[in-house]
Length: 123
Length: 123
Length: 123
Image (cartoon, rainbow over all chains, first blue to last red; front, side):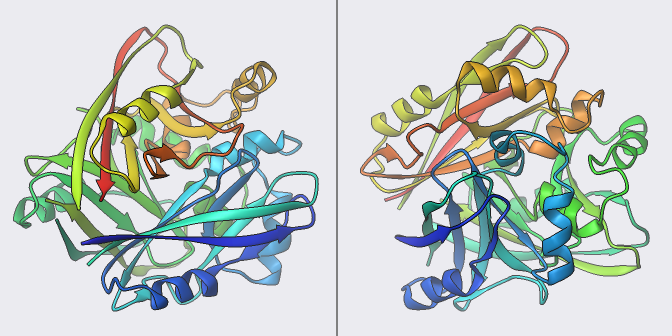
């Protein structure tokens, strides 16, 4: 069993931005030496979050409109969704649903250079 | 150290359904070869989620009524709670609280065959 | 690769209490034998939760006021944020953002002795 560490770098441009990072995480898993395991994603910072959604135009418009706290603080939104997400993989393929993507949610109000820590564990 | 992979299969019948899967996850951990570790649960799909609750009638009625977005989209609810949940175990016993159960939350509007990916890691 | 198990003990005094446990988790990672890996935190019980925030006075006041369900049930709040949180570490240092702390959120209405399960995995 092994642990491998990688980073995904992003540049975000506005508050409420939702970025699909699925293909970048899949590429990291494919390049790695672990066949079966779990990939652990974490955002350092308290104004961004990670989750999975069906990444399609209707939902991309819908999601920011429905942040549960309406006019809430970006820090609150980020802490409610959380900075951490894991996805299992098998034969180096992420076990996501057909319409399910891994997304990075930017809640900060200014342009940011972001990095996501990607730790893979398995064998 | 080892990784073991299993699946829990479910059939859900209506939106807002909450299914207690604790005993099925505990059975997987007991059957496995890992004594101490963490079990990682993940739902492929973007209209369901995993969390823990005290599984009792009052709360089962209360929870759907209080989805933070009220009349929100099932995809939004699922993405806020998230598709991933882990629970540590020791001596093959899940380290849950006495009144804490692992639940699957169905947010889709139609009958679904669901599977939950269960990866155990530890030694 | 190794798994190590520890416990953080807390005493909470009132509903809505937010406790910064970052230094205690960092101390566990430093004392451990694992250099690079992930630390998995889990609260047994269905009326508390874990997340990360920037732990500063404004936000500490803001967060309880904005629980998305307003006058919702403590169990609902706990299940939405979730009992589990992981943080990656490298060279025995948690990979948090500069202003990002690990916090325990108490949603119960009475004084509680709490424990947080801390499992570290890595090599």
